[in-house]
Structures are given as C-alpha cells and as structure tokens.
Length: 119
Ligand code: SF4
Image (tube, rainbow, N blue to C red; front, top):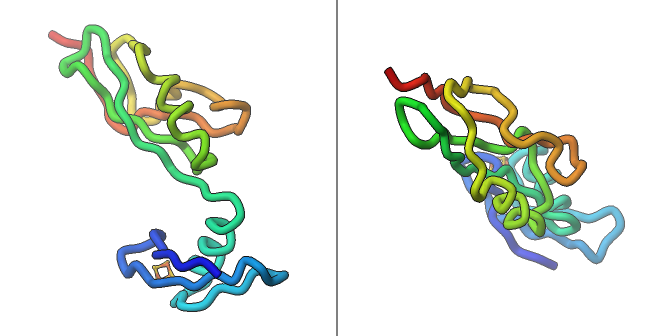
C-alpha cells in the first residue's frame, strides 16, 4: 500500500493506494479524479512540466512554457534539458510550440506567455 497526496486540486486529499490488488484500489479520494490519479501515480507517475525558454529580440528575455500534457515523471529532467540552450526569436505567441513531440510522446512544450518584439 502506498500513501500519497492527490495533487489534482487544492483539497489535497490523502490517498491510500493498494497497488498489490487487481484492480488497484484507492481510498481517501473525494472524487473520481483522485482515484484515477492514485492508480496512475502508483504504476506510472506523470507530470505536467513548467519551465522557461530564452527569447531573442523580445521585450523580455524569457517566455514561460509548459508541456501540453503530462509526461513520465522519470523523463522530466531529460525534457527540461531540451530547453537548455534553446533560444527562440520574438515574437513568441501564447500557444506556440517551442519543442514538439517530446520523446515521441505527442506532448509539446508550448509557450504560456506572449513576448512581443522589442521596440
Ligand atoms: S480526490 Fe478529488 S477532491 Fe480530493 S484532491 Fe483529488 S481531485 Fe481534489
């Protein structure tokens, strides 16, 4: 049995996940999202990743980015390495794909902030 906090919403329910049972049983969740989260977290944890990327010629030097979906927790640092040293030209629009199809997952790093060209 594993104990964990559900991070799907601010309530932070304490979950007990019986991952030695088939199907995996989850207790302590207040809603169905928590049951899904607990079962997935026990087997193959995933995370949405937020970061920044450098912008050349922009009104500010960095743009915030995040993954368009969750990726394996074990690949988070490798995914962040894809952004290291990367520079994109302004303007950057919210929703622009900064790194596409991370490790063939179909998940992209996308801009979450618009950065206009410097005047
Ligand atoms: S189980 Fe439901 S209510 Fe509880 S933290 Fe997770 S999403 Fe929120």
